[in-house]
Amino acid sequence: MGLELGGAVSAAPTRATVSGETALVGIYEISKLLASPARLENVLAGVLTLLSSFLDMRHGLIAILDAKGSPEVVVGSGWSEGAAKLFFERLPERAVGQIVATKMPVVVEDVASSPLFEGVDLSDWGTEDGQSFSMIGVPIKDGDAVVGTLTVDRVRNKRSSVLFDHDVRFLTMIANLVGQTLRLHKLIARDRERLMLESAWREKADRAIPPEVRAEGLKGIVGDSPAVHAVVEKIRIVAKSKSTVLLRGESGTGKELFAAAIHDQSPRRNMPFVKLNCAALPESVLESELFGHERGAFTGAANLRKGRFELAHGGTLFLDEIGEITPAFQAKLLRVLQEGEFERVGGARTLKVDVRIVCATNRNLEQAVQRGEFRADLYYRISVVPIFLPPLRERKGDLAPLANEFLRRYNGEQGVKLRLSESAMGVLEECGFPGNIRELENCIYRTATLAHGDVIVDKDFSCRKDGCLSAILWGGTSSKWPGEVTPLPIVAPAQAPAAKPPLEEESVGAPGVGETCPGAVNCKVIDKDPRTDYEKLVEAMERAGWVKAKAARLLGLTPRQIGYALQKHGITVKKF
Image (cartoon, rainbow, N blue to C red; front, side, top):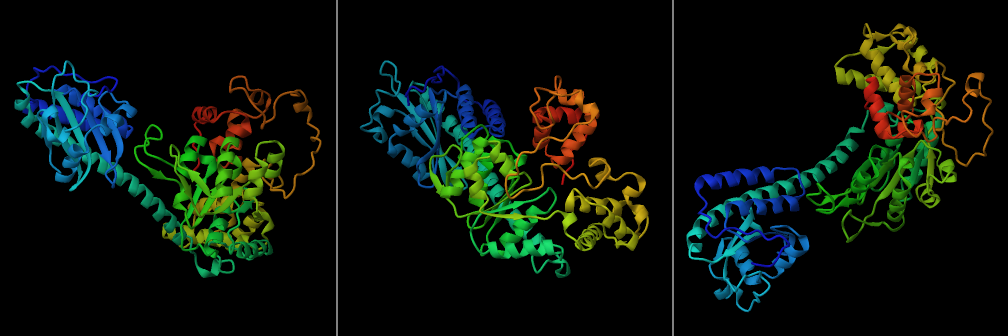
């Protein structure tokens, strides 16, 4: 097999037979390489390189076959993918077929005179001075099935026949190791897909709560206020169709829960409900998560991986924080929404899926479109049916059932029987909860944890001890709600900025919190603001829901600078 591979491996013809000790060293080194978390093609090429150190061989070839027997992955010594595939194609089908059919090693002492190579042009096989050569081929097995072949060739000489018996045993052991590695890669890919599907089904089952706290039978929706009734009524109507839904509202209003309710009320209720937070991943990873990738698409892509669109086929895909995706990725997502088709990363085959899309955002997308930050065509695709979720302060009468539901969950988790007193409910009703339901849940859990008795009273709350997180976050008054989070149905006209206090007039020309900042060292936002860096960082992280990428945009910094700042000030990122 003398086809030039751009770096053929040569071995001295006088190399001794592989001894038992040398074989053990070879198996040890190759097993370490197979266990490394590298791209499969690179690992297999490394195996051939190591083999050249222990065997008399000019060239080596590993071919991984698919279910139909066609080559799926082909690598050769001094690996060049194109040359390796050409090398494999010039192997006579009779030789490869005998290895696969018999599931046994094949030894060809003289390729030129072997019936297996009859009629094959050997002029391009890299022979030197017409010197004949030999070939050894062994099957790569997964259990009892042959999933590939490992072949090597060497210059034929008087010592060749002496080396065959030892080398066949050595190559068979190496082929077994490669087969186990392939099986492990397939199991990992299969288990990941199964776990994601099971997780989707488990989350759907876990959303069930006692009937007394359901809003008109919708699982997980607690409350009986007119604002919630209006949303529930709209959900019941839109759930019957396939139209894309855009859930809008402040952070903490339960957008994921309402998205699950849409799925549960739809004809797709028995199919998967798959969700993804678009703000939690960089663009390159987000593309792979949504569309999947082919084997070898990039470093570390050792196996084919289905994306969230494929996993949600026939069901519902929930895209949270849709307003945070980059303009480049917006164009890729638009095509899927328009045509219902896409290609995996690194793939050429077009896949079609039937998925109902539900999106969510707390951004004002109309203003983002006006500023050129969000594509207008994508906006019209995702905002077919917009549903505005009311903040907690507008859900009159829902505070008590929500608080009791969160306390019920806490009691179940901790094995206790706490209850809220009238004075405790009075404290909750006085708070505006700008962080909405998420903040209410945080308040209930914190207070229940620190309660002194079985009945929670007003003195158990942090706000009675000047330790209210809401007061720290929003400046000590419930009248200060988070800016830029209240959704607007239309683009509001530009308004003149409010007059600045005397302290800020000295900073005219300095960038605002949302403007671009060149770096943490020269950032005028930090230098001119009277607050400490720690306070500004904590405020930005709270506004961004503790998502570093969003906080970076608020402060005009990069996510890496935010990470350095959190580490510098010893701030632990909260998990919700």
